[in-house]
Image: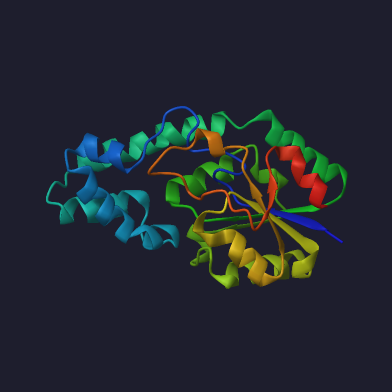
Length: 224
């Protein structure tokens, strides 16, 4: 019997493709470097940015110094670009997201969050209208580990006081999260309701036929 639903954040409850997007190529253009070179160095420290080693500003400084283009003004410019994009993301949360969460609360189901995030994303999550819904929120930047590390999933069940097979895990599939959730003993469901908004090279995950799927937010209730 399902007693809790655990969610991913990005491309699950909110979408980074809502409104102004600001990915690696946008940062590269703003700071005046080749986007391929920037992406390579930016992705090299992605885990470090995800587990609290670097703030966004510190990560930008590391990369821009390595590329020989560092100035404080460029760091501020890129950091502000991310803030502008995240503002649109969290201002554009679909009504269907809240309808889904409200229905879970009506059914007395616990709600968890497991998300890989950087420092600025963590701040937006904690300040968002979504945050009060979570009984347990595991944010990689605070936890010091990130998906698909099995420890993220065991920490969730421990803090909820539930068994893994009592948990539904809903995510778009990025970071191999659905495989990790399945390996942990949870019931994984791939959500695809934001899939049409993503574009290459930023699509986090293809549609995976081996997992149950929810094309709309309320479809998750078929698996509860």
